[in-house]
Amino acid sequence: MRITSRRRAIAFSLTLGICLIALAVALNVGWIILNWREGVLLFLGAIFFLLIIAGLVLNTTFLVREIRRNEQHDSFINAVTHELKTPIASIRLYLETLERRDVPPEQQHEFYRLMLQDTERLHSTVEQVLKAGQAGHKRGQHLEIPVDFAALVKECVEMARSRYHLDGTALRFEEEANAAPSWVVGDPEELKTAVSNVLDNAVKYSRDEVSVTAEIVTSNEKSVVLRVRDQGVGIPAGELKRVFKRFYRVPDRALSKVKGTGLGLFIVRAIARKHGGRAFAESDGEGKGTTVTIELPRSMA
Image 1: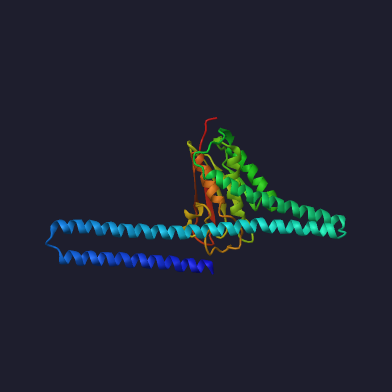
Image 2 (image 1 turned 90 degrees about the horizontal axis):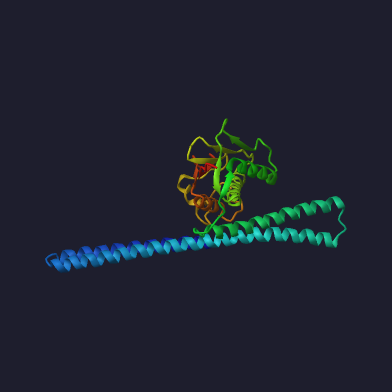
């Protein structure tokens, strides 16, 4: 209901802006026709009306952007609230069950395992929010040490396999034969965050059967490239750049029920830029999978 009202507000703002611009243009043209002999007044009047039109365009654009930004913020708050409340409610339920009932040891161990998973989910959500805050500070300092990027990616792949209970065929790590050294300079923890976020997205937005490949390419003398390919829901062409914005999530996506904060790829791009590289996404369209690429400057370490 709230989204519908916002769309109506955006439509109303656009319509009002267009009508005001059309009215200003009509008045300007009419005034020129009636006063075409008055050269100086004609010139000043034309400038005046052009300024009015420019102001109306800027005001309408700013208003629409603010409405969309508020909508994204509300979506982010709702997502984070859900990501926090759900595991808390689950942990509380298990604890109340353990307190009030005589639970067999086997079931107790299962409850403990599930509570640990919920705790990890809480920790992950808080970390995402904190990382997004740190990524927003473009001038923030970070550790600069030599990092074997291929080894770091391989470690992240192993962690993702364990976290999502996947085997080596579902989540694969590939490296070129006789690959050149893949050293980069940067903060290993931040780079792990970026790689893990890309892998998490690839797994979460896959279909029923996960098929994800993390490939390290070192053929370029100046850079080290990580490509993470999935066979999932894909991304429409018009959304490929927007998915890296803060709080942004692709609307009407095939797996729209997948929960998230809309911060993962924003953090990936911010970390890549902080390390002098870049991050971008490629997709042939909905249902045709996605490839997310992280490109970092090579170090001669």
